Length: 622
Image 1 (cartoon, rainbow, N blue to C red):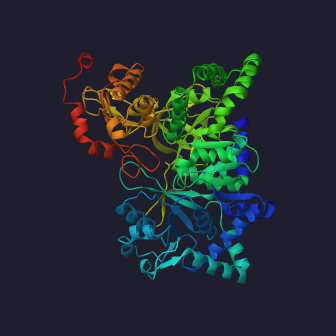
Image 2: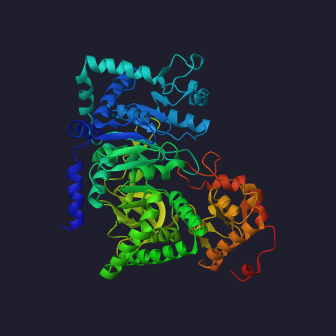
Image 3: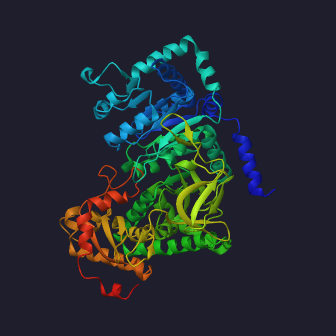
């Protein structure tokens, strides 16, 4: 048997009879006094025994207010311990928790609550309850609304109950009949749902992805088999728990590994959290890595020439070793010695400022990351390895490994997974990480795979001779210019975002004569850049029209164009005066572009980019 197949078979056997409650019970028994959950800058650490005890009490309380096995519970809450506790309590009842993004519109909240037939809604505070109030009369299946932080009496309704009351009622019930809790969770089978995640999407109604206990535990087992990190390793949770990456890395994987999660409630404090925890592994969406790289670049730009020279020399050594490893070649002893010296004297202190000095595996996914950013970080001695997958594949379906990776690719199939390409390049996957299916409004589950078990992902890619997958675009996000040229906007946007000043960029050109771009400045780097050059007004609205900054953006566009074929080149652009965020609507909660929203919202700006005379360079193209 092929070694990879043998390892996948072993992973399947390990995960075969496990559920999340089985693992949490193990942790409370075997690792009772080890830390499980902490909030950054708070003295609130829970051990595994304490966490298990709180989950038991809350499970009884949720059962008391009408949450049934197989029933759905919606959670709209920030990252805080109560989020973990109520989620796991529902799981121990055999119910299905579903965290939803707080950026959903009123119509989207109504759709998700109706579609899931939610029995219980858990909200953070009175403000969240006020947002939901217009929706509540439309929810016939809703039995109770649990509010975590105390609300004023006027804010409450007959269906509303404080979490403190749910906890106290449940704890009393658990003391009276402790065996009831165990009977409930021991009845849960690995094929049952562990969560329901609504994909944010870029258009249309979200789809409810049903993931099983086996899906998430197999992912944890396969990750452990592929990437070594110490037992009981610390980690940082900073993404929303509606995001499959955080749900897996922040809940299920730490339960499997009996790790210690530190919650970072405010993503702007992420670097502080990383410094505090110094984790051995970390997953960042591309924007996180881009901002880290931009921050280091800005710091170096203001450093003394001697510091810059020392970094350049150390970075060159680290990058040389990185390129050898990426090519599958050994690092010679003399180069390894130079690298050890460079790390000790120059690179490790910089890594420590980011909290990455212990990093064994650093991952990136959810969207493309510019290769230039990967190479810059590799020059810091931090190998950021891309993965690929989706909610429907329990997160990672392909993975680059520290000992086997290829820059610009998203790796090879995860253990037990298979990948193939259709004639048009669309990627199909099958294996134990593919979800149970999509929830239907009647409560049944619609399969996501064809008769042979293959899931059509909608992503387009190529596979090289060594099995490494490279994502080239989304199947439905290809620009076709008026001259018939097929162009990948994601590739163009990645090249533009490689410049530290550019926070977001969207390439425009579908059914247009040439490609243009809307550019959004990085709201942290751009003001620093401006102040360093004596620009008195460093606010984004002013910088968007500042001649010096526009010249720098033009240089960034020129650099990107130098790496693009002529039909792909950005002929002109506009720098917008404000940031894009999920709250403002241009980005999904996972920081992907909402292209339709952007095109509609900035229609006048886009039209203006095409009102001038077609550039001379374009007149000679097809």
